Image (tube, rainbow, N blue to C red; front, side):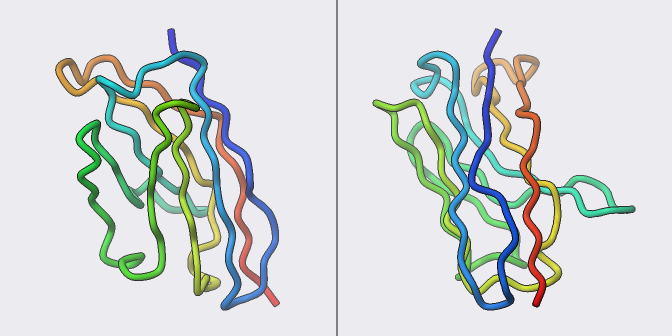
Amino acid sequence: QVQLVESGGGLVQPGGSLRLSCAASRSIFGTYAMGWYRQAPGKQRELVATIRSDTSTNYAESVKGRFTISRDNVESTVYLQMSSLKPEDTAVYYCRAQRERDPLFTYWGQGTQVTVSS
């Protein structure tokens, strides 16, 4: 079992920045792809960004150029640096860990709220 704990959410004004962190309960970064997803009220959960064990990344079109995903294998932590935030970025952000060779092993964090509002 892998536990994921997100932190760093909060209230920020449009145009501002936040950094989300997701710490894994044990070292999994050698074999797991990590990702950030978000879910706004009344909408389906959607992919924000992913980073594989080889550090290749993938971003949703809506966040390209504004968000950056990174990982620290020593600390077993994945980050999401968010800049130029917009009100439409408001959502609960979830961290996900998925074993690359067996996607059935997928774990989710509890989520952290990000609110972009003036």
